[in-house]
Image 1: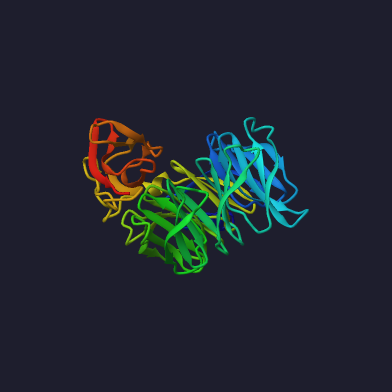
Image 2: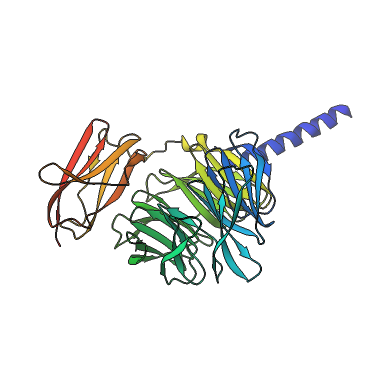
Length: 418
């Protein structure tokens, strides 16, 4: 009898082990903390910021991935929707229960154990997601898309707006913004945030829930279809180049280089290799007991939330898969032709790096004098990228765009025509 019992236990253990193996591919959970109902996560440095349904935002110490733990809490009178972090402040959107509007709370997180803040702006609409680029906060909403100047965080003010009903998500890249909404992705010129201008649109396969960027590509999720890959190298003519039917109901999307991370509204995380944009494919997954609500990716880790917990997932194994068809990067830095050229005020140039590194950009006159250094200078991953050059305030004539990384210096002649 004892042998039979041991056999049954062994069989059950084997079955459970196989089930768990099927629920995880190339991704392992290294840390978990109970949070309660929430709507997302943002990770900066050693801290994770989680808007929660129990009125406000929780702060977790994630410096030890195996032991995430709560250290601070900010109270808001309504459920928290989303949070963005910028220069020591957290910008939390939450329901304003006293008026039925959405409130923007600006919170001082210099001491994450004791965050303090207050409502600094309200809108008469459902407005959850927030994205910050430079000194501007981009705020999609159910009635319109707003841009706030937050150079003075204690007095944010409306800088511009764009009428777009049903905006769901937004991503920014230098002078361009990408607005996901009702069955379309819109490309906006945000070089002057006070007057955002639409440059191009593309109809998506379904309702565009979320958008993430990687160089010349935008990754868009739709709950009823999957992941769509759109080439955005020409902002006036975005083109759909790839699609993947992700299981169940894709919700939010994040990217790190050519790896795309899609969370599902029903059951978990999918890691997707999009190096070949025409043939994206799943290289890893992790199933959770509940549908996921938020995601933030940092290096090898995906921080995801469901309506119960914060999970810290190690995705290094999935990201190390090198399938056939992965493009081979050049062994040197390359610079693509600027478009348009000649140009009026603004042009875009592409470049490819064989390895990650610091890249500096500059605009020079024919005498070799630097007339502009671009804010886009910084650290870039290996792969293809694009940057925009703004020549506002410069006279017509010939100039040289220069990129420098390490000992490599490349130049390209462009012509500015007023």
